Image (cartoon, rainbow, N blue to C red; front, side):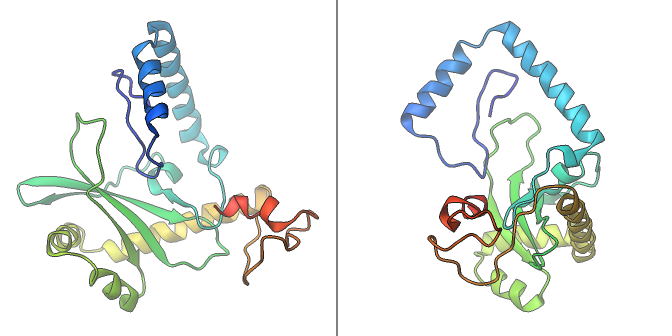
Amino acid sequence: MLNFNRTQGQLPNQKKHSKVQTEIIKGFVKNLSDELLVLFKQRYMEAKAFGEKDPKSYLILEPGRYVNYMEIFPRNEENLNFSHGDGKLFAEDSYELDPRVDNRDVKMVFYPFELDDKNLKPVFTYTYHFDEGKRAEEDSKLDAKTSEMLLSLNQSFPDLFETFKKRYKEAKLVGDDLLKSGPKTPVFESKIKPNDACPCGSGKKFKKCCANKLN
């Protein structure tokens, strides 16, 4: 990830770069010309304007893939910033778009609230289950420090459960639109072996077809 202040960072869900990859990236950033940086800024503004107008133009429907709510609804202004102790944190909430998957949960990543820091590292990740039993099980795995952060979030947003349910439904509706308008990626109910014929009907082996779309 290239920042416009000529620094580079790594996305939270991205695999750690190898030593060789890191050196290549550093070299690219170091030798980046002013003209190319301006071009990147122009492309960024164009992509952002287009994305805000039609988020479905870049959203991809893949079973098992969670998408940040701000990516689904870029014009949304309801953030999850909250105070904790002497500082502030913010949470990102992501949703499974596929309406055929009844997951009923939200994937969350918590970050320190630092306006000037372009290389924020996540404090912790958490799965918010709508089912109280599953949520209690998830909470039992947290240490005391993390539990306190989660408590601060719930105190700042008393209607958090209702907020997540609303966003969950909105995300599924977007997924339903994508399902109707785009290529179909099947959901597999039973275990399929790599060398079995792919259920999508392509005639290829599962390992060389839709198995790649689920990874």
